Image 1 (tube, helix red, strand yellow):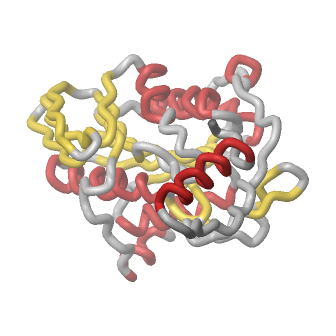
Image 2: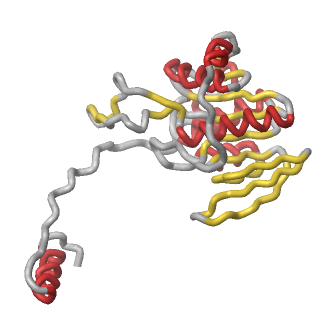
Image 3: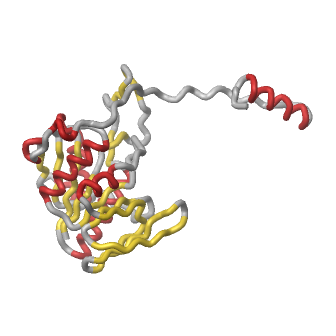
Length: 255
């Protein structure tokens, strides 16, 4: 079984966001594997160990992403691919086109990824990629079982479970609870240094940059305004209610 894992590099969740000249600054910021993608990586390794085959991790970004790809290789992934051609960087539309080109070049039985990236929260990556490839897509998986060509997925639906049955090839996105991602071991870290990490460009993938240009444009980015101190109302209940109504009408202007 050949399993592809789509991975995104994101800011460490403990990092403070800094905006300079209307853009998010990543100078000196610590980066990590997108947390939801860690569940996808772990599940891919487990399925490979159970059914045999190969796990290939794919990412789109600058050479800084190599750090996260090496971490995935240390966890047990077999190979890594980094599309580091800046002409192929863009929005979710562009990224899905690029990942689809890589998937077609590689071939696959199963594609795994996180159900969303914690930086954008868009949740578009999985559905868009599946659409580009013309395969089924199951999101927010908390359990995956494969028997031959048959796939059974339990997915989280706002605290409840939904069971989906489908067949390979399929794209599945991972939700928290699918597994417990492993930490890279020292032997794994040493082995990762020798595992293949290929770099691909637009020419390698046969992509026309003009055909996959971004469909969205970021006009402005800004941090949310600081919250003002709350106000404690005093007096009896009728007077508090009256004052609250006046505040909502005259200051908050919500009624």
